[in-house]
Length: 177
Image (tube, rainbow, N blue to C red; front, side):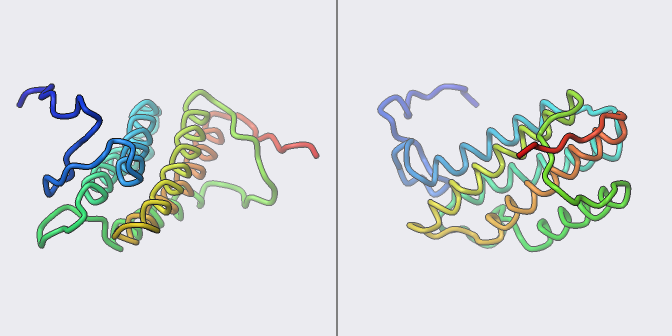
């Protein structure tokens, strides 16, 4: 498989169904930002915690499915799409991680250990991916479960940042108003 084809040199790219669209379309912005989240999650691994690394590995696979889902305006049976079970898996991860944490009672600053800070960064970009997805879904057909997935994923990344920081002994800091 060649790495370069030259097909995108004029600012157009192919969707999964081979429709050509502008690289600055809202759909491309959405799945491009999901790609950015995936790369940031990849920078966090390994965290030094096998359970967290396994969750993040699964998340990276899910994010690849989100990209394929957003790149396909008319999915057929068997095409990769995010389903409710993906959202439920992320919710289960959040619940599992929360079991180790004290309840959150006020806002915290996105900081901490190296891995905790990287998770906070990934969370912030995930929120941007969600905004891009909502924007493209306002104009075109989009899988609502994939947008819900991004919303839950940002919650998971936040919770994992807290968990890693807790395990590293790095206290949370609250903003001062």
